[in-house]
Amino acid sequence: MRRISALRLGSRARFKDRWSGSITAIEITEDWEAVNAVVEGGFLLWRSSVRLPLSAASDWTDDCVTFTCTSRQAFRHEVPPVAVPSRPIGSDTPLSAPSVSIAGALINQADRKVQEIILSRGVAGHLRIPVTDVLFEGKTLALAVQPEALPQYRPDAEIDRSIRRAIREDRGLTADDKRSLHFAVASGVVTMSGNARVENARARAIEIVQAISGVTRVDDASQDDLSLETAIGLALDRAGVGRHSKIYARSSLGKLQLYGYVPSGTARDDAVRVASGVAGVREVTSRLEVKPAAG
Image (cartoon, rainbow, N blue to C red):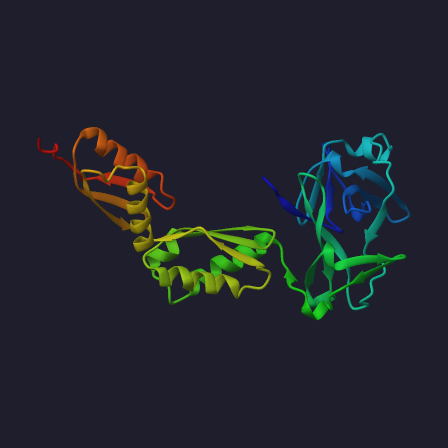
């Protein structure tokens, strides 16, 4: 599964034995693979920096990079960096737009390819720009899009808190809808799952989420009761369970009851199995009667 995570400049470095230093630069190749991270540690005049391979990092988040080596191994240069042609990007990297500076990168943890650059605009917050819209011209990173036109970047945890607050405070959604709809944030993309009473509630929830700064897209994987009942009917027909049967599905926020009759116990079990496999179904109660076909 592809996981995009923010590697932020200034993030603290966590080693096997202790916390020590912070990230000051990310070294990238020509095809935007992040190969090394530069960690600076120490106090006042006693400061040193070390280049560590990103493969030595087991995870990174907005405020922390976790390395699999000890701090002693790192600062004694016992963990060699990746020796390939690369260039560092950091807060001092010149940009074609002087109003912003590099604050980090959104990186695919599977192949360590940089997907987007995070830009800082001071107290005004952070922006995000795809690497397809940037190009090095000498030492300067040129932006193909003006900062004013770029979407805002916010950490996923911060977006998640904003979503929860906005949904909780909205007066257009019922208490049932608020409890039964769920939201997951990954790199600014929000996936809405769960159940709602009606389609309008789903549309309202999407509208709320899209209005939150930092959200780049909303993927709707939720179901409303009517749509779910329709999907169950189609699934039963495709599976051939509806033959010689009369089955009615009634959903209440994904809790399903099946009514009607079927020709055998096997057909009843098949109906429950098929209905249980439809996305959005949380529970199935069978009230199906067995009526063997005549003749």
